[in-house]
Amino acid sequence: MSKQVCELCPHQCVLATDDVGFCHARKNQDDVIVSSNYGKISSLALDPIEKKPLRHFFPGSKILSVGSFGCNLRCPFCQNYEISMADEDQLRTRLVSPEELIRLGVELKQQGNIGIAYTYNEPLVGYEYVRDCAVIAKKNNLKNVLVTNGYFCETPLRAILPQIDALNIDLKAFTQQFYSKLKGDLETVKKTIKLAVEYAHVEVTTLIIPGENDSKEEIQNLAIWLSSVSKDIPLHLTRFFPMYQMTDCEPTDIASIKCLAEIAREYLHFVYVGNF
Image (cartoon, rainbow, N blue to C red):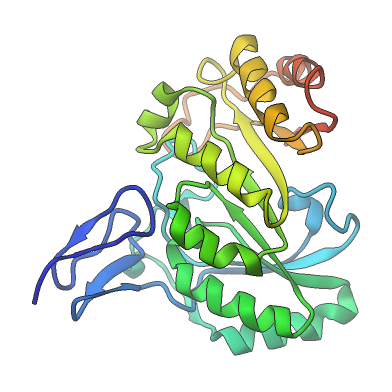
């Protein structure tokens, strides 16, 4: 038995047999890197598409949202930390095959469902499940939506993006200093956004955290860069609430978010505020 490298994201975890990666969702099984959360579903709900959030992709429709466990970032403000930061043995999950998930998605068309949203935790740490579901969904005229942190390598992204119809990508901040705290990399996420717009509809979300990523200069720089990709990419500036390891902080001031949104609107055609 030998060590293997997981080449899905920039962490490039080197795993001995039965070792689990940084994301808690990938492991070395018999010298092959596999998704240990394959089909293990922790969350399943029929959501308004606007909750993803997507404002310019089939507005008014609903989408079947599915989540598992694991994430390849370490955000101390994570809104879904119960599943994203969990190990497999810390959660109760239900095994749902790709065929079963898509069958449910088709049944829910009569309730306004347009497809499958891979969300709640970081979906791409379960890359193989998303890929397999997405292929079957396409064959059944269902849309595939990916809600992701964007911290992944180009080769696997290019392989899966032809199956994806829309993405909401978290742009956590616009400084490497901030991303370093999360064990991530700003340039990688920027590359993901630029790559994704070649294949699918893209919207971007930034959670505004007081004293962390809420300066006017930072949001201006973020908006300028995003406009260089496309002025038509919708940007969602959302309100932070105390959560996970940041329960001693105050919620973001609403007036502050509205001010930052006005700055972003100088460069982008569509800027939305949320979590009010």
